[in-house]
Length: 337
Image (cartoon, rainbow, N blue to C red; front, side, top):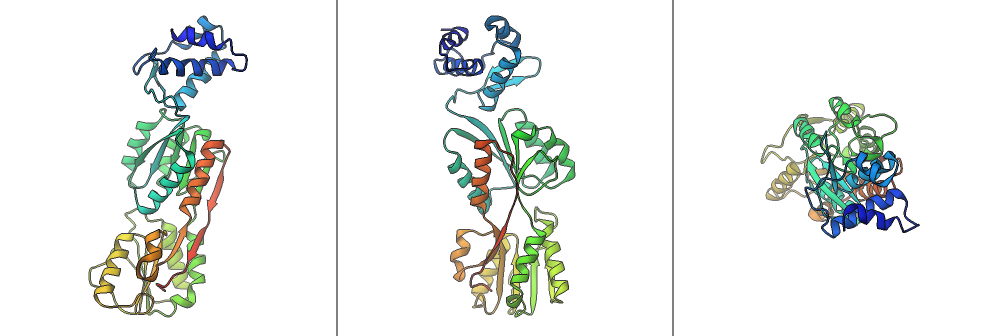
């Protein structure tokens, strides 16, 4: 049975709209191997002629098939079958910074909340603009939804604006786009400053407050601004270090980490020196994780709830409602201060 015959049979089902007849006809043709990967679909003009449907109805059906990842359009060549995964409702490009622990937590919750009918392809840009642009050019036009943790660089705004607002969700870091675009993002400066203020009595017991911050990485600048403003206002003995030097840990210092790499190095050196965490030295970390609940009696963190962010993102994808929300940061006080 041909594709056209499949669609004509579906016309007998009164509950199906013309758009649904077209989509289901292609799906059934793929399932029965009438259409296989690489096959070209009839042109929009041919479908209008053969079926008598409005052009916009054909276009809408083909666009839905593209969003489900079954069909890909090639400029001046037409529409082609590119997948036989017909049970997929929507194909999603998820673009993240890297597969760090907290982003792994986001992915797992996002995947679980969406369920098996959604296909998620994950890409990592590592805060490299060239890599980001390469990924963007690779995925553009091939997915029904784009969930992107952007590099907050104004040069990327024109690229992101080429995706229609209903198909783009900005997550994690915020980048300014037109008002109709959705986002579920963190805010770093004011939230970090507020949490440091809550911790002032504990911070004050240490002789020096040290933030490890590398401006050449994806560390959020808002954290650095909050740290410098807080320390200046309270006249604290403080410094910003680009990296940690092995065996340089000192008593009565409070260490604040963005990167977990340096966190583990300081904890290792503290253990070797028999320093007590929360007494001899203090530890404060960004981005919570289950490991930080456990080690050394628990590490105090300032963190967004990445599982909740993922659930919000998944619901945005499923229900296609406009979402513009800043996710709050939480202070999780443990024994390291």
